[in-house]
Structures are given as C-alpha cells and as structure tokens.
Length: 171
Image (cartoon, rainbow, N blue to C red; front, side, top):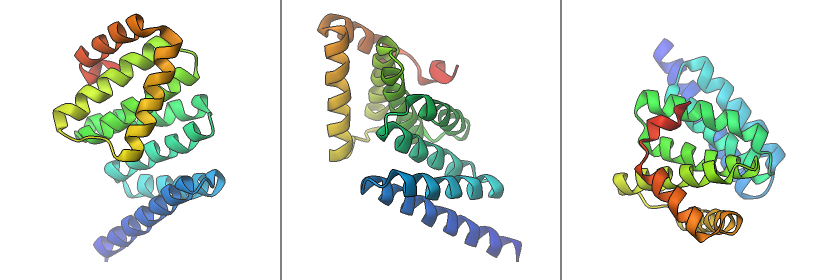
C-alpha cells in the first residue's frame, strides 16, 4: 500500500509540475506559481529529491520571467545544491543558468557571465545542447551581458566561468 501511495503521489506531483510549466509557457505566471508550489510541496513531503530539484528550478524560472531575481535566487540556489547532491548534472546546468539570470537581475553582471560560462561548459561536457527556445533565451542573456560589460570583459569572465568547476558555485 505504501508503494502505491508514493507512486501515485509522485505522479500527481509530476502532473502539477507539468501544468505549472505549461502555464508559464502560456504566460500565466500566477497559475504557474500555484501549480509549481503545490508540486514542490508534494515532492518535499514524499522525500523525492529529483522532483524537488526540478520543481525548484521550474519555480525559479517563473520568478525570472516576471523579473523577480530576488525571489528566484534562493530557488535556484537550493535547486543547485540538491541537483549536485544527487548527481543530476543536467539540473546543475539549468540551475547555473538560472543563477546567471538572477545575478544579472541583481546587478551582478560579472558573476552572471561566470555562471553562464560554467553552465555552457557543463552542457557541452554532457553533450546536451539547449532546446531552440533555450538557445534563444541564452543568446538574449549573452547579448545583454556583452552590452553591460563590453566584449573584452565578457569574454575574459566567460572563460573563467568555463574553467571553473561547477561545485565552486555552491557557496
């Protein structure tokens, strides 16, 4: 009986998560936040670390889309820590990218570029390219940071980020 309830709970949490992601994609941030918060609470209650990490990162995305970097940062930070603990490197890359967005939103462009470099290097090592939508978002982030810092500083900081092991961003 316990296994069935856990399996059902995970299915419900995953469904809530997908509804949240869909609502976010459709521009309905309030519904997205509600569904993802429900999803997160259920995954936490079930002790599902993978689901918890994914829910945190998806919820961070919702906050980023509404330009609430201060709200997104703790979500991405916790998601990164959990993804690192469980060895989910694709989720680590997602968290690093999210933290890059929040650093830019918090007027920390140098840190944003380092995080962007680390995220891209990890994705390349995993041979996992961004989706077309993700690539467009990445290019927009890249362009905004190049404009903020200048090409020379951007490239130097990006190289530092690419060479920095992702674990060093856990602090």
